[in-house]
Image (cartoon, rainbow, N blue to C red; front, side, top):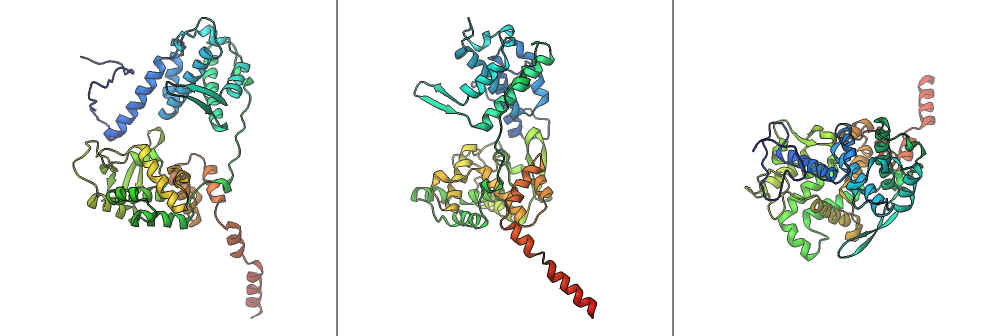
Length: 389
């Protein structure tokens, strides 16, 4: 059949996907990246052809996950131009011309962000949904459009750099006291619940009997390493090298990282593998599998974490925390135990140390501990008594 360029129709539901993998990456990581590439190709195919060079730019400029977000933002904006701004003679996003796009002004973008994006109606067959965007989402859309229009200006597709007229979107400054995380005693209560089943409903207890070792391993890995949910969900049996006491994860921008295995993580993972995890299920080599024998989905992991964190905090299920809050829990706990902020930054893969500093600022009783351990007068009197003798 020969080779062909990857497009949204290159892989269909009628064919089984097979991977000829000559890289060091496991097949599930390759497949996940391929799914995202197919999604990018699908969105690009629905956008005007004059964006072709911009698509090439995104491929080399940003991470794959960011590329998906930028393309979605662009399609959303173009749909707005057709459906809301009512550009004359346009029936679909694909019909937008470069001339029409070049006629846009900074005022058009500011109206889109401040007026339309803050609240709009999304119509479906079953219901109409009121959609709201918070400040952070608006800031990302503004960033996506800024990158786009700067590129078009740089490539001389439009005559003016209209981004200079974009209104700023001020993000609220993160407050350390507002960081959502579990306290150490809540982590203890959460882990006790997964060990004993305490706090679970009768129906939840039936599932717990079959998955308690898996669930405990998941919670321990989250709270020990501060893993992102995608990093944990993509773990394989082959990710672990017990001879070297480490396991490999795949982070943003395709970074491969070896994480050291401590005794706590090692024991819960091996307990799960040896005593609970069925053999011979999914050929994809997943570490954490569902009761149906497939790799656990992101949603299933999120629901699991929400359930046990709600028990840990002694609140209702809907008030439980997401896996990202366990990442915050890991950061705060490590700093509270006295580990260097830079070591914690490296472990959690924070690009900027100021992100990690937020968790350091949240250290409980930090000021009191600092002052109590710095008794200036006591040290002064000790030195005086020593000199007198």
